[in-house]
Image 1 (cartoon, one colour):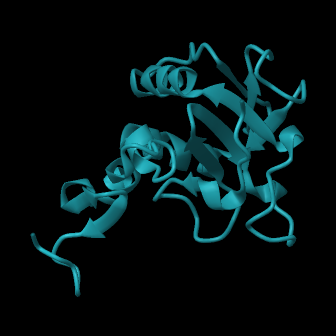
Image 2: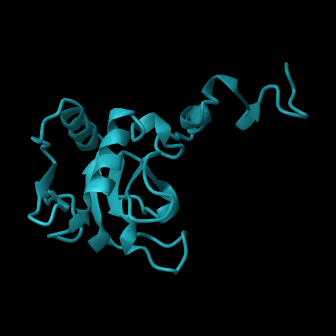
Length: 171
C-alpha cells in the first residue's frame, strides 16, 4: 500500500535555491515520490501531497533512475525527462501503473534541473539519506542511518537511546 507523503517527507538537493522552486524527493516504505515544490500551498507542511502533483515510483525504479543519470544517460526507465523548447525539463512517468493520477507532468527550469542532477551525483537522494525510509519496527536503529547516527544508536527492550547523549546510560 502506498504511504501518504507530505512536504516534510521530501528533501531537495543541497545546491537548490534557498527558496522554493526545487525538485524534491521523498522516500519511505518502499516508495519514492518526485515533487515540484512550486506547487506547494500555504496550507502547511503536514498535509498529504496531492496525487496529481507527484510522480510515484518504487524505490528500485528510483534507484535505477539515479544510476542512469549518474552514468550520463537519459534512458531512465521509470521516468521520462523531456527538454522543452523554452529550456524547461518535464518529468513524466514512463509507466503509469503506480500513478494514482495519470498524466502527471512536473516542469523544472534549467537551474532546478541542474541542482537536482548535482544532488543525484552526490547521492543526496539515496535511500539511507531518508530517516523514515528504512525505519522498521523491529530495527529502529535504521531510522537514524540517514542522520549519521546509526553507529551511536542502542536498542534495549524497545527503547532507543543515543550513547554519549546527556543522561544516556553507557552500559
